[in-house]
Length: 128
Image: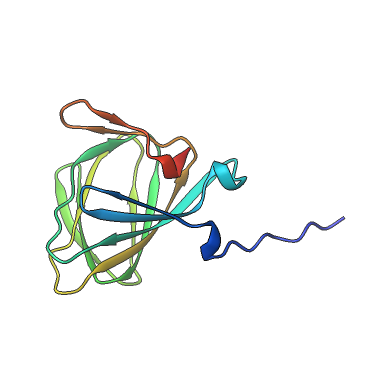
């Protein structure tokens, strides 16, 4: 028996804001996902990310704008169509130093947590 793939539309999306960024969650355990989470990240012009160490690998596909990444002390820019891989255990921050808003599609595994420089542990609702 073939089970049709579910199509997730905007009605299931939940919007969260944190540190000036917007996270629009589409795939998460609350909607039945057992392994993956996915959301759209939006960064306004001039936004500066908060460095955090991630517990799970993350993949970011830049959809629009230029995402400035800081990964374990190295800085690189990723333009629309480019992909950023953030290894588990690495320290990461993302800025928008460009002239247009940044939008990226982010995928990770269920249960991702982040630890800020001051030791604060964050368990984002869009990953649990």
